Image (cartoon, rainbow, N blue to C red; front, side):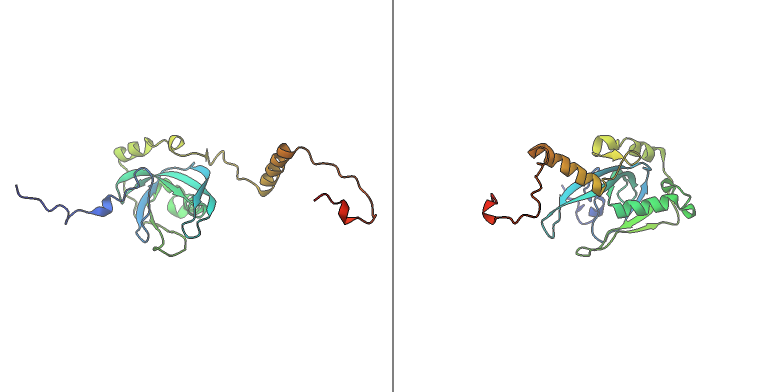
Amino acid sequence: MAETDALSKFDFSKVTGGGLFLKFVPGEPVVVRVLTVDPIVANESYEDKRTGETIVGTKFSFVVYNWTDEKAQILKATPNTAKRIGELHTDPDFGADIRKVDLKITPPEKGEIKAYLIEVLPNAKDLTNKIVQECAAIKLEDKVDGDRMSFYKPLEASDGYEKAKATARAIKGEDEVVEDIGDEPMNLDDIPF
């Protein structure tokens, strides 16, 4: 049996992995259609590969159709990327609806620390019923933890302080009342620690 040389002609860029979640390859643009206007917002922690420290960041999850890989996926965006999507969504020059335009998203090259480049393409491709059904089959609530943007309340710095204070009180009890001893000189030997 003659062997077919499929390996030399196979387009490995079509199997980028990622599965349900869109994975970017440094420097390689991906063309998507964002179909979610009420994304899920969640605080997630991850390890910074450069420093090894744990970082807590906010992610915005959108259902997108990935034209590059020809499949429906979930895009987990940083606040900057989500903000740019929001700006394009309300821009009348682009129809004031992000679901009507295709975006070319280009991640930085490997080793570069800069924002993703997000461009609106001049001609949007037509969504078919099959594509819409494939995207509608992704239930964000079942795949991503968090709240819809319409219900999300960002944690205020003062909220964090109040929660930390309440936790400390629960652990050690109410703050002890220290009797005011006035301006009398203090004997350092009387300090218990």
